[in-house]
Length: 259
Image (cartoon, rainbow, N blue to C red; front, side, top):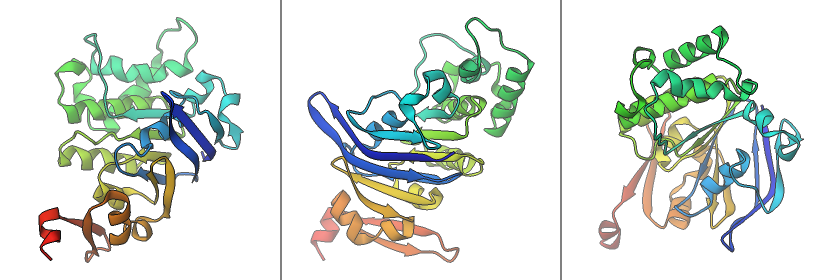
């Protein structure tokens, strides 16, 4: 599936958050949306997955305007993994993942063998099959995020939206989750806080600052010391290791001042 965003505007509480954002994501691309806190990353993604309604511009899924899809139809096209997932009830892991089948069900329709098969496959993919009967609330943060990813996989959509899903995870779980996502045969749009994670996993990057796109390209094209200084207001050095992987080293302000 491909996604196109044209001249997207969003005003929240009287403040303009997005200012004419343009974005294009091709079939099976993993595209990262980066930028400092408050730049509009999550607002952009929420407009794509219909939690927020933009005040101007349009979003297209496979060339069709998002507003022309019913909510159930768009939920069959796009699944979401957010950074915070709270449940007031004591659901089992299997129950949480089964929620991903809701867009494919009629009102009061019971879960069937196909639903349980997709749930089992999703839990196997994220390495959580042995936890199916466990209470979701007893899992660690990293385990919970893998279950939420499994729920998105069980939704069986051609596109995934990741809204800073690794922001509060240990590096082990960040890498585990992104390894799984990278191995999926799906279109992925991810808001990413950590630039080294973005460099490691993304095919292309869109950089936001103050609600506007300020850079587009591959990680190597976008993540330069000059860009990091202009957008994030910190000094950094970039280098490529023997495998061709780009890395970013940040310089503390006190060290930069002493140069």
